[in-house]
Length: 253
Image (tube, rainbow, N blue to C red):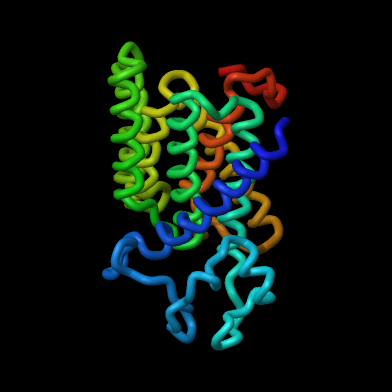
């Protein structure tokens, strides 16, 4: 693999991961992502450009704010490294020069933003889901018109299932945000991949919950960021679904 290409892909992932933190932390606040400026959440000092160099600033500053010396959350470099790692893995396995690869990387970026948003705040922003859906809809209408119908049906069935669970449980089992994300994933992956993405997410979420209960770090009423599991599985399926890399006992999609 070309080292220059690896470096450029890695750098792109780090930069987009840094922008992802802006989306996750400022998308729904009053200042927004356009007019708002990055600032320390503790001392509220406006950060300079050299305080915001992806990963390098975090390392150079010793994970502390330059101005108030309070600890910088590790979630920021985690977003940058996760995005960079996912982008490099995707590009290595699927290439990077086709229109389809740019489309799938855009969807992966939105899914990662949703993953971190749900993990940190237990929120799945409508703006991100709508943006992802519109990107997918436009791409399918232009280049994959034949799957638009099946994608819509898959998304609607999955979303309706989650919405029913939300209504029956009074919001205790599933949130409406999960229903919206299920529609987005079902539409993007279509049938049967979209269905398997949700089923695998349920299995992983259940196992994770059981482990936390056994470790006494949660109970049966503890809320889990299920949207994060759905987004993570969807990302993995987008990356690996064209390859013979499958966990035993899980049917090939």
